[in-house]
Each structure stands twice: as C-alpha cells, then as structure tokens.
Image 1: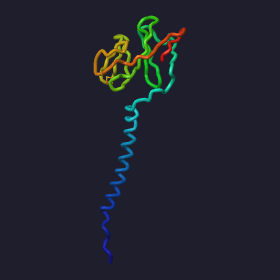
Image 2 (image 1 turned 90 degrees about the horizontal axis):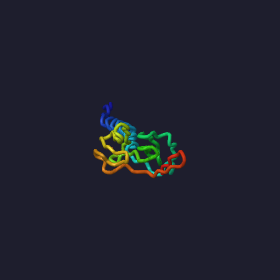
Image 3 (image 1 turned 180 degrees about the vertical axis):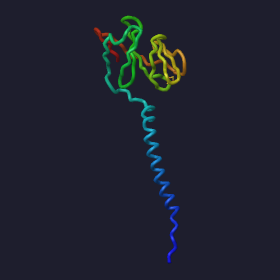
Image 4 (image 1 turned 90 degrees about the vertical axis):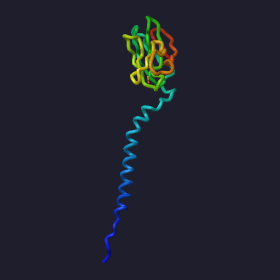
Length: 144
Ligand code: FES
C-alpha cells in the first residue's frame, strides 16, 4: 500500500504565484491613472495659433483654453488690453484658477498665487507663469 503524498508546499507555491500575479495586475491598473496624471503633456500638440473672439473675455475676466495641448488663459485686464498665460503652475504643474475678485491666479494644489501678469505673489512656485504671444486682428485675439 502506498502512502499519501504531501504536496502542501507545491500548493502554497502555486497559490503564491497566482496571488502575486493578481496583485501585480491590480497595482498596474491602479497606478496607470496616477502615472498619466503626473506625466507631462508633450508640447507641440494642437494648433500653433489659437483664435479667440474678443467677446469671450470680459474686462477683468479670464477665458481658459487649450494651447498646444496645454491649459492656457486669456485675460483682459483693461478694455482692449489682452494677456495670455500658461495656466500650468510652475511649482508641480497643477492648473491655476482665476480669482476675479482678487485679480489673481490661485493654484489649488499648494496655495501658489500669481498676479494677472503671471508674477509669483506667494507660495512655492519658483518662477512666473509662462507668457504667450498675443496679437489682435479685427475682433479676434490671436495667441501664439
Ligand atoms: S503645484 Fe501650484 S503651488 Fe504647487
């Protein structure tokens, strides 16, 4: 009569491999959105010149748009005067918000503040918001 074979160690090894594989797949699925969020967007995507009707920006207001695949903002601080800036915070790349009452940009991530000209007013951002070229053609504002 033969004795029963003890293959407990083989089962444990097999289960360990299966659970390790499942864990790796789950970790990859969870990490992908974070990787996409943190990875910089390549420049050069989108149009080189963006046309925005003047009427889209009120005096003292802001109009957010996409410039070469990245968030940007057009301001009209005084009637007929336009400024375009990158809306990407120079600290860690969050998108700034326009606070019309204060006439400032506020970064929601770490409290960075920028003036309407893009200068750093406070918080951790190391440099001003990138300025974009603006020109006026009839009732259109051309950025880029
Ligand atoms: S990312 Fe804007 S202050 Fe940190």
